[in-house]
Amino acid sequence: MKKLNIILGMILLAAVSLFSCKDESGDYVEQLYTNSQKEKAIKDCLKASADSALNHLCMPNGFYNYNEGMYRIDYAPLRNSLFDTLGRHGYGDLSDSLIRYTNRLAESCKAQLAPSFTTAIDTLEIFDYDALINGEIDAITRYFETYKYRFLKSAFQIPVSIRMGIYNVTPVWNEMLQKYSQYTAEPLNFDIQNYVVEKMLDGLLQEMRVEEELIRTDSAHRSESMELFGK
Image (cartoon, rainbow, N blue to C red):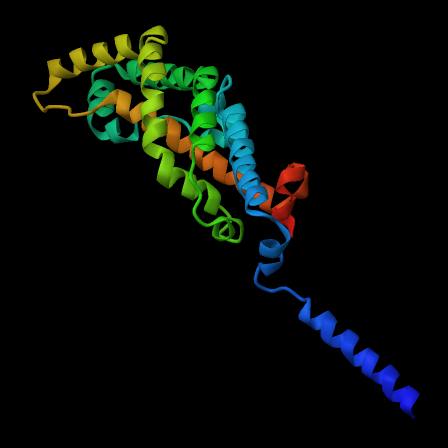
């Protein structure tokens, strides 16, 4: 009888231990990895996401056609003013050219933008590793955007400014404004360089969100340092 009680006690102890090890809150990840490992995982996630975004969009027909044109820079704010006015007077081809040249500009910037993303990620301060690791599907990219959007927007200005001339965006834009002024006195207040920079940056950040979700949900997208996202 005594032997039976001992066996039952051991079974009960094993059962208690089993259920006590079950993790429902992410505490397992918190306990298993050091803060240095968590920081590396987060920053490696951002670097992988940025590389994916640049590789998808900053390539021929990337911004223009990738994912059925989801990231195309199309000047939607000008469609009911500048584009419509020029179209009614036979200059719709200028609008088409502006869109085409602008997207070619954006697609040419990978070599200039990649170092800016690397710097932004390396200098990102992280205050709560576990909140990002256990957060929403795009928590890391949203955090990165919150703290580094202004830095990246500033870093984009020179590459975009230079390429606006190289890729004929500025000459076409000036011709469009000249034609527009012939047919209406209504002023057009539009900062084209700021628009292009923001559309490029917003597109790249959105594509980073897509990759972050894949890293969190598909082990094939994780490097060794990011394995904690599968825990």
